[in-house]
Image: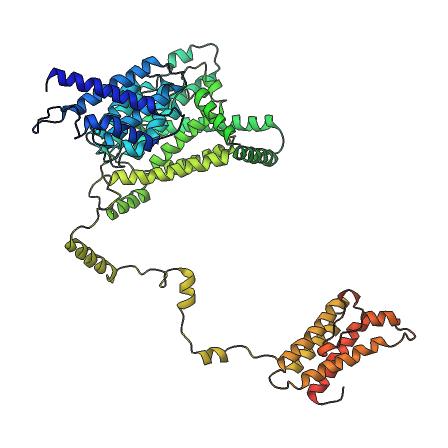
Length: 621
């Protein structure tokens, strides 16, 4: 390679990159993958590909130096864009994103090394403010699939990505940029395997950095504090060392000190919570109902207006701060009045209690069973030789119950907040077991050789035919199917014979007449329905045996209802009323107005039943 060739290639490749960036449409939050690929192929491709329109002399035994020259050109151009356009300029980040998309496409086409996009992003992070880094990280999240393709955690892209994110985390404030820190950690967790050593604390080491608070001598000499305030301050901050380093609980009188401090803190928090409820006024149930209604209304409004939700989240991320615990004796009384502060302390107690539950005898045995089932030969976690039992276990259980109740009463959204905390703690226990087992892989490699498949089949058959294997409780797969099929099979004739016999027609009529006579408290319409239904049921029962009697029954009914057409007699109804109640005798059917049933209709139906019974028995009606 001569100097002239290098200078010529460098000039031409910079021109090509500028042409690609200038040709990209400046549209915020819009990708143009096809457009960018065409630009790269037509401008950068002829220079950096095998086409080699500049006739650059390349040596077969050495790497292609054009990739390094192209990377250097991209770096200079992107840094120039940063200096030319201020961060506040609307087109600043869009032009950078277009340039980075061109880098990604150039890498995909093989004109750059795979690690170059991440290297350039790392350079850009160093020259931007925190707000600018957050927008660059938005780009990283959107292009995650392309940036991390074929990434190996221990080298290449993996090392660059891990270094870039760790450097960014060091720059961020844990008080003001908490949400951004969480996004970075979630991105790393989704990009690297769960068992990656850089993100797993296999030994279970604690952050034993001590919490600095005022000395006892200074507290005792403070004339502005009462004796109760001095005692509570000492207990509160002396107890906190067990949160950062729980194993020291098992040394000397550590557990007694924790119990004393925990009781004092719990009593003070209860007192503050009761005062807050008293100040808010009204019954606790009523207040909860009102707040729930307001919360539901707010949720409906927020769902209807996504812009409002985004605005609120942006405001929280921008203005809300998560300050570290301030240990000055002047501030403790103010801190414990803050709901978030009390929640923080209660959650730390719950985390500590879950750690202590791991030392009960039952939990130790259960953990060992889980480890054995996962094939763990030894624990990687360093655990103290201690067993939680007796009064100590009882105190932990009672205190946990009280703290959970207090957490539920803490507004806003106390119950929801408590459910989330308990869910996270349950999941955390599963992670502890997984780490104790040495972080075994969740995914099993696919079978590639036929002998491996045959061996797996033999192993599975041995497991399924093992006489000591516990039988599955549902022999047909699920409880519904098992209930339906898992019973003695009967023949159809036996099943039909076991069916209850149909009642006799005479029995149906007698039961209907008896029910009408004995239930005088029923309305006329209800007794009419009983009689009319008995007539219909009787005709259904005699259909197969005495079908010829069915027309006679309806003729009886027709003749009885014909009497309604007779002129009004003394004590009887008028002719018009009789006409209204007249039945339609077409095809042997009688229709009666539902709204005009009276005592005469009921008597008519009873008369039909009695004459039908006489017809069936052969006696006179």
